Length: 93
Image (cartoon, rainbow, N blue to C red):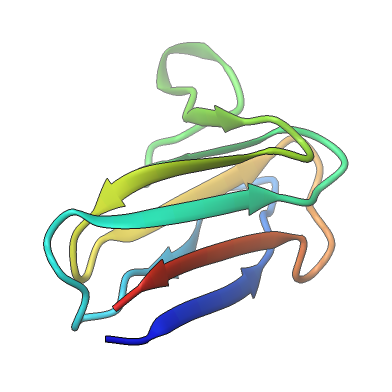
């Protein structure tokens, strides 16, 4: 297993911000840090920034950790596009 580190960005439409490594173990802990100037939202392909399909909110300057499986796709969105590399994803796979 190796430590993985990825920098990415969010757009104003739902887009894949990362796909978990195919070699990751079940229930791999994933940490996402939001270095954007506003909140980002993560979830599946149906996420939005508000309403019934609002994604999991990650406030600016904070991180959240959750479990994921090999091949899981993490989708992200924000009200304004983030700078390239503003979103940091780390895990071991």
